[in-house]
Image 1 (cartoon, helix red, strand yellow):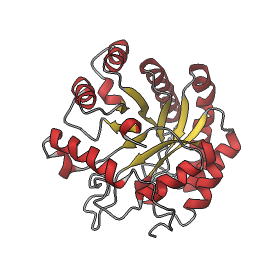
Image 2 (cartoon, one colour):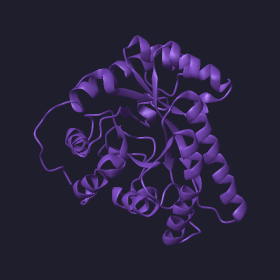
Image 3 (cartoon, helix red, strand yellow):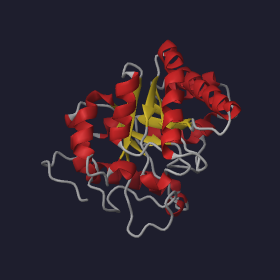
Image 4 (cartoon, one colour):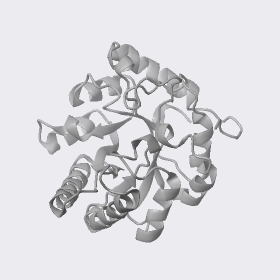
Length: 280
C-alpha cells in the first residue's frame, strides 16, 4: 500500500480553487481528489473534466448531495432536483459517486426525518442508475442529527440499503463520524462491499468547534489504522480520502499543510498493523 490510493478533498485545502488544487496535488503525486460542488462553479463542467484529465487526477467523489427532509412538498422536490443535478455533475467530471449528507429538520421528529431521507434516496435511484453513478450515504456523528443528518451510524445505512437495494447505493464511511460506535465492527462486516468511500481525519480533545476543528491524522484519538483494516477486510479497495474541516489548518500556508497531509497519511493511515480493539 502506498500513496497511489490517496485522495484529498478540495475543502481540505480550502484556499485553493480547483485549477490550483489540481496542479498542486499532481505536483505532490497525489492521484485522487474529492471535488466539492462549489469548486465546479464558474466554469463549464467539460473544462473541469479536462483539467482533471490533463493532470491525471481521478475524482474519488463529488461532495455533496442529500439534505432530503423538508417541511413542504416544494422543499422536498427542490432537494430531489438538486440531487439529480449533483448526479449529473458527478457523471460529467468522471466521479463514480455522490456523497450524501442526508439532512434533517429540527422541526421534524427523527423518525419522520429518516422516512423522508429514505424516500428521497429511493427517488434518486433511477437517475443514478442511468448515469452509472452511485449514491454514497455518509452517516454523520449524532451531534449533527438535528439539522445536518438524521442518519448517524453504519447500521442505519445498512437498514436503508436493505430496504432499497445495493445496486446503486453505497456507504461513505468517515472515521470522524463513526469511530465512537460500539457496533462499528459488526456493522462494517454487515456492510461488506457496500462501503464505497472511506474518509479520514482525526478527533481532537478538546474539540473547540464541532464543525471546523477536525485534526490532521495522528493529532487526535481515532484509531484510524484499525478502522482502515476493518473496511478493507470487508472488501473496500478504493481511494482513501482526506477530508479535514479546520480553521486552524486553513489559516496555515497551504503548501506546508499539503506536505503534512501526505506525511500524516503515510504515518497514521497506512500500516499493516495487527487488528486490535478500537479506543471507545
